[in-house]
Amino acid sequence: MRYFYPAEQQALFTDRERELAELEYRRDQLHQGRQEHTSLFGLRRIGKTLLLKELVRRTLTQSQSEESDETEEGEVDTPASEIVPVYMDFSHICTSPETFATGYVGWVCYWYLTRGQASPVSYLDIASLTGEVMLAGNREVAGTVRRLAEALRTARPDRPGILRLAFEFPEELAQLAGCKFMLIFDEFQEIETLTNFQDSQNVIALFRAAMQTQSQVLYILAGSAITAMTKLIADHRSPLFVHFSQMPITPFAPRDTAALAAKLLGGELAEDVAQAIHRLTGGHPFYVTTLSERLRRLVETGGWALNADAVQCAFIIETLSSAGRIYSFCRYVYDLSLQKARGYGSLKATLQVLATEEGLTSSQVARALRVTPGSARDYLKWLRDVDLVVERERAYFFQDPVMRYWVAHATRGIEVSLTASAEDLADLVAGLGQYFPTTTERI
Image (cartoon, rainbow, N blue to C red; front, top):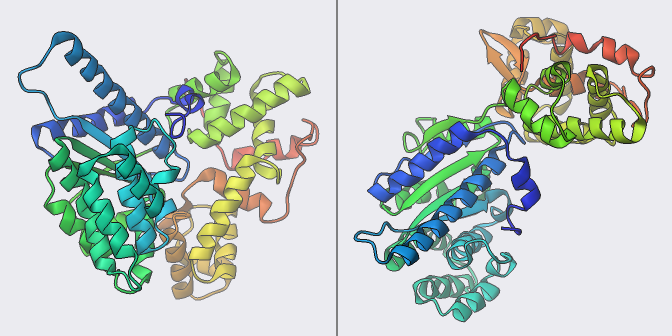
């Protein structure tokens, strides 16, 4: 698993037992011939990928344990077909229909032949994939790989044909090999990139057509573009409508935030420290991790005391220093989101208005920007479409309070040094309450 889920990542896995139990239940139902395809929704870096990797690890561990039991106890009467997990990140393979088909078939071959115990590099190029299959001497996969290689050699490949070949491959292999597959697609919304290519506009319909005829494959989709994923899964106009149940991946509760921070800080935390970390991060695992790592550096190399005041200073340094990881993450999400939307300058101004005061109606935003109500509604819709803001009871809020804090400061040129002292940050610490209200919830 070192190529896929290193030991240091495994050590940081925290909570998510409820979500894991639900996913494992769906996986185990596949043994009974029941398929409940599932989609996961959540903000970027909320922990979806780590959850999916832990599911893969536990599935492989379970399969190895069952094989060991059979070896010790002899032949069982009705052995269940092994469920082979297949994880693939669509953000890496959705660059063209040809690359996608190769990557799709390649990842299925990789997990089927190696169970994640080798480097996947040679499985992602059609020439080296063909060589790996020949070396393995596996007749079940050789035919499909050969047909795909032949199709890709033509001057103008039959794109619908190679996409159908890829989508149908897992079921064909499962039937031939006597196993079942759990296909996990991370950043699934990236599949829409393929619709920009000639002859592949109906890729979602092709996927659904293959999925509907399959009995040996379970699909688990995940995506960080919440609005795009919702349109793919829950919009009645989508070919995938009603085919997937939905599972939201939410931030950690206070207790789980404290557990993760304790792993990173090397011991149990005082109540006020744990509360401060949860208050500022909202339980978002990436923010918890990054803040805790910054806090540890301040304590171990800067001589800071490990207390709630140090937590606040560490958060400001990590969020408002251009070298901070939270700063870099917010900058990336901000730039990427606005690039995907229209009206870049107007949207920046809209975000700054909401960063100063949340919970405004579209009419109030229009007055603040001095634009028409229709224009303000358009701006807010575009920001909803890229998951930067949400609408609740006709008022608008940032999806992520840390992003709100970053926009309110970093986009106006407010920046701090990595080596700032507590005295340097005093004014900014005093202003945190405007963005992160104090909570008395116990860990």
